[in-house]
Amino acid sequence: MAYKIVSQAKAWWPIRFNGVTEEGEIVVNEIRGRFVILDEDEFVAFNDDVAKVGSELVQADNPDDRKTLSGVLSPFILRILENWEGVIEDDGSEGGRSVPFTKDNLERMLRVPNFAGGVTEAYRDLRKAQPEQRKGN
Image (tube, rainbow, N blue to C red):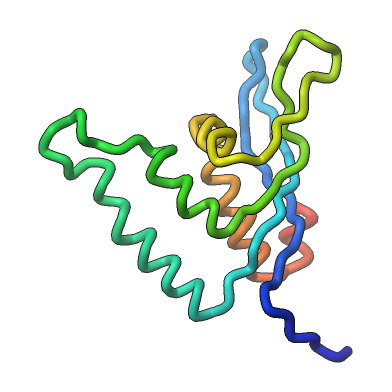
């Protein structure tokens, strides 16, 4: 099979993250994310940037100057995630309201337990390009 070079590779990929129902049952939440597949040079720079900024969460002298996890993570996630499907907000209707992908909505989701880890795990699996990872095996 031939390989086609594209200027920016992108792909939809499942994002899974654990949650707990009101009844105390563990559930696996799943949405789909449209990821930007960084090239190797971009990926190295991305990882370097992530490593540098991690200390911002705890190194501020004044607690008021400390950054929130969602605020620190969102610029990085926005470099690799450009859209999603399956994020629903409870608006009182039976099916809920679809939540559009925006910076503010991403920051809301980054405050949801396990979501950030689900995004990074999904991106890691996507970059590996291993079908068994996608199937959840």
